[in-house]
Image (cartoon, rainbow, N blue to C red; front, side):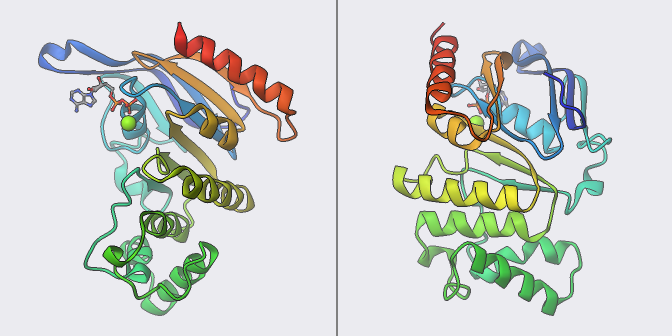
Length: 249
Ligand SMILES: Nc1ncnc2c1ncn2[C@@H]1O[C@H](COP(=O)(O)OP(=O)(O)O)[C@@H](O)[C@H]1O
Ligand SMILES: [Mg+2]
């Protein structure tokens, strides 16, 4: 499926690891993500999702093929992406010696935003994530769900137009994860972000994505479907069935 205006593009991307690069984690992957799309990238553990994520985020380079984000190479032009891509990992990756508001302000600090504006912006996003009153708490004093709220606030605070999320809710209990997922989805849409959301959960992919790409080892596309916003329950169940078939085969 080709999006009208791809902002993220993988062209025949391969990533191999190990001695003599004998292990192929991603195999000649072609993937375009359109501006404003919420792509759920679904696959079993070990199928290469985080490897794809790391290449889009510019944290690693493909063995062959080309990754383009907003017209540039995210690995080679890494510095050009400061403030343009925001990342949420499974682990909140907060700095334990910084309070919630200081953690949210981290990306803004790196963008040289002056302290007053940094603080106002961080407080605004803490408010959006329901954390007012906890701004001066250190991560150890917050629950897992609250810490992940802080890291989502941090991702939105820089106003990056691309959000990359690698299983951000999978370490949370189901109820907490579901609530946060709904809030996250709303914020992504309200703020017109493009998001790539990695998950190993079919339910999560169906709740989050307006497009679902199912990967099979070694990270090749087994299914690529669009979900209309007003998709009926019957439609969703039909898609769920197709995903289950693909993952079981
Ligand atoms: N840095 C690495 N060195 C060697 N093998 C790796 C490395 N990163 C990932 N792999 C392997 O590549 C495969 C895909 O890993 P990963 O992308 O983390 O999968 P997922 O995120 O879908 O669980 C796994 O078999 C993993 O062991
Ligand atoms: Mg992973």
